[in-house]
Length: 447
Image 1 (cartoon, rainbow, N blue to C red):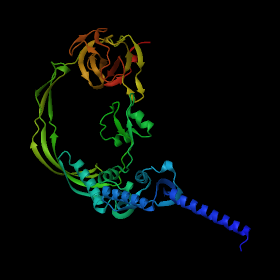
Image 2 (cartoon, rainbow, N blue to C red):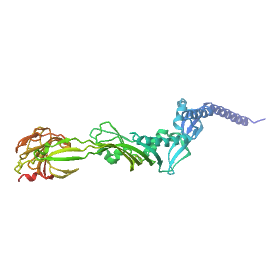
Image 3 (cartoon, rainbow, N blue to C red):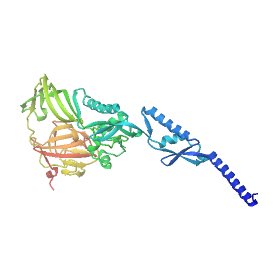
Image 4 (cartoon, one colour):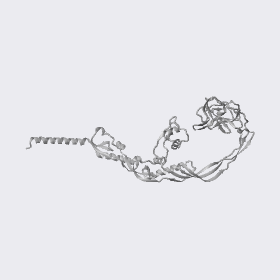
């Protein structure tokens, strides 16, 4: 007969065992599998097969999208955990897409032994190189005057299989841009009000030459607010050497004969027989490297049209000495820029600032030998004070009040202050030339 104490002990053991059995059963009923990628939980499944099916679905999606055989590049692990009710609704597919990278076997283009870009297969990689060639030839032949008859790469180009994540597989067009630019980096800057090429280049540790190289469409210093500028200076991976045959029509300058007439003023000269430029068809062989011309050799030249000589009559009648040699001040205003060296070059006269429309006077008596628009001077009047040896220039005028051939007296109003030509504000640019040489105008004013 079993003692009473022993029976009670066994009863307790059996009760504990029963409770443990119930607890273990409840655990497995209420626990799930935590799906982890790289140690981070991305979702939960009730059965292990669910995680495998989700992963397989993502692989199928990637293969359908890329047309390539892919596999996960990161490991997926499962761990038994008590079901967290708040997390059971997690979209496992979305989480896995974000967490798992896919890898495949692509084809790398290597240049000089350095891997540059990876494409999906060798056929596409070779097509990328061919597209670089086509783009280069199209640039050379765009004006239809050149035909490229040979092209080669200075560097060794090789193709080989590599393992790569899908994000590193480039499209054919992107690969072409990388090969041409030397990088897949695309940094841009949006022009703001008050910007200049100099300020933008300085702020981005570039030179203006760099900025122009990065933006071949920049043909002047003018930029507009909102314009997008590239900040990446192209440094192509490939050096393309090409030889082209270029046929152009070149102008042949006409010669000129000059006869003199001492009864006419210098500004009264005229063309007796107008010249006509000739023309010839010329063929060159041009060698380039990355579009830059290295050499040009003349192959042939065929005359199309002979030039016709121009005959001109020049007036040689001298302007008599008319001035006093002692100037009056041409404008009452403020001297803002003296004669001589200054930032950006040499100032060939003096600048006198005054309000728009202020009257400008002839510094001395003379004859007007030019009145019109001339380049950076804008509206310009030139007065010859005798024999062509001493002349004065009055530039940037808003209006010229005299014509060529007019005789002016000292102090006569000949123009009005303006800001035409290259001018930062209303002022007179007053210039004196003696025998064609620039002279400081202030030397004509006694102190």
